[in-house]
Length: 135
Image (tube, rainbow, N blue to C red):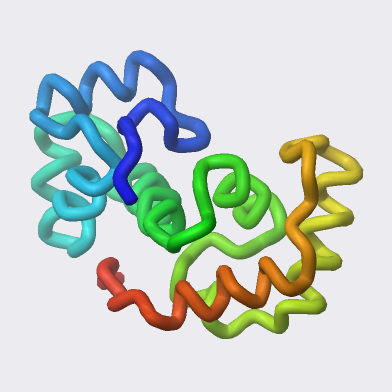
């Protein structure tokens, strides 16, 4: 699923405007443009963002394409220490659900916590996706 570029966690309106000026309006377009080191370098030249910042935003966009994820869960996942789809595929559902609960108790990122079963489904959905980002 694709979302407007402005829905990415940490994306300011200034950054979103720079991406729009470069022709990138969706998370899918950002992921395509920034999926390789060469692509991030070219995009960095166009937007004046660092390649590291572009990689971080591309990883968030990549997580948001997991069915059932959405912006809020992607943000909660990042706050729980999972920053890439590749990393998500290797996580233990029970431990991840517990970590997400602990983070949400402190930071109140989502209203309804995902159950261990829904975290398991997220992990299974992530395993079905082709990996897009190269490092």
